[in-house]
Image (cartoon, rainbow, N blue to C red; front, side, top):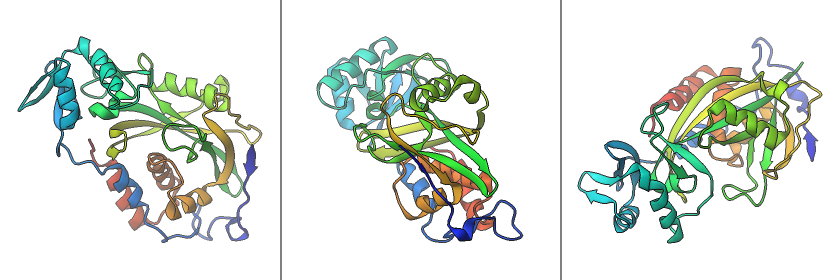
Length: 299
């Protein structure tokens, strides 16, 4: 299902004298709450460092540490140590103890971003072990005479995380063996039927990191963000069942929705804030405050 949104009459053109700017419910709810929500983890807190050999790769709570100890891990005052060759199997056994849901998707484990791959873990184990995950997000934009519009997806009701929430046109975790770009191309085809000739025009714009306590554990995510300007005639189609519908929204309406509600998936808000900043939709004082918070080191 595709819904085409229309701008309210007051927003048919940019605010006079400010190219590319719109006066759309500015000053309502503070966007900073989205950044604070995604950066609510204090490390180490109650968590212990998790090592593969001598390399720290994660953070674990005492009950997970005890579970790993029962499977042969070394636990001491300095943290929990597991052999790289054993971490996948140990995590598989922990999932059998109902400590987290096994997803049957392998992700690469690194001690530092862009460092060597030390091991692989199931996607479901990453938050339980506090291991950093890589992901991709795509701003699918359409340029119109009255400003930029954004394709918005609604997540399927059966999704494990945040069912029914609003999302980006394309997004997903980077699986083992793939680069962020390769993942973007794959997800663009599977989620929105974007052909290769179009996704090839996507441009990397930023990387956003955060450390967040969630029901599934500690999310330490690193999001590779892209912009893609799509032609007016292109209409995305759900292909893999991840999305219920796509809607085309004027960017100021997206800003208003993010200000007033929490209907976007939690980390989508961070990527949108970066987009609002780059599009010049926020005044200088608010923009500087949000940019500093968004770019601050995390997790």
